[in-house]
Length: 280
Ligand SMILES: [Zn+2]
Image (tube, rainbow, N blue to C red; front, side, top):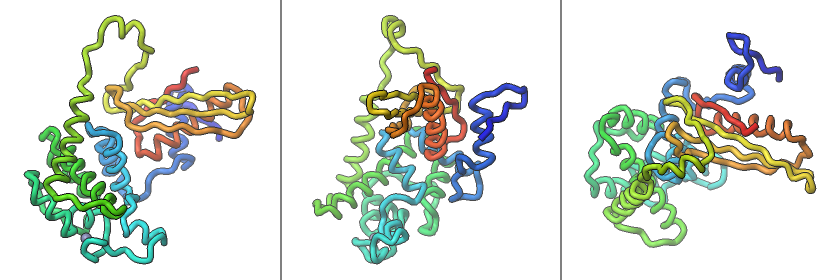
């Protein structure tokens, strides 16, 4: 691939990324025909003030890749798509909102939804609508998603032979997990010595994510490694990955490979407004 310059005639990673998207080297998610809608939803998922494991749960639910019976059946892993609890079709929305078990759980908590959710909606639809309605209500979406995660976690525990927990306990455990996360993540005021000693990481512009990539060479084993970390505008880590490459690359080639892997990774996690940064 030959990378083109931008409108002003300068080469930049951004122009290369745009070109890569255009020609399909990094493919767009095709599960929804409205890119703006999807973009807002992905931004909403990764911007939530939630532990990473709950963000990843939301991301999987939005992508219809939670290991529900429906998903496993579609991938021909299970013989049927019946819910173990009630025998109906176990989609993500059935499991989280409409199953006998989940309706009991929701009735035991104080969160009221601003509209009637339809079983035919996808999790992505529901999440996006709630995100719009609750935009001004700080933390409400996070509570709803955390309880969904609690229901999912509880369902998996039961499937692995664990004991079924009462609805109010599932709700309180999920909300306590969220509360503990918030308490542990209160950002301390930065001391002057911290400022002097810390590596300089410049945040991306508001609304953007920064993808830092780095490559490492292991000359003895003729291998290289690549690390990618994605952070939001205030430095929260939203995704990270690393990969070993069984290729005897040079230093510059490894950095280029790291950038390529970082671009693909950013696309896979559904981010569009991104700034890339390497260390050389
Ligand atoms: Zn069910």
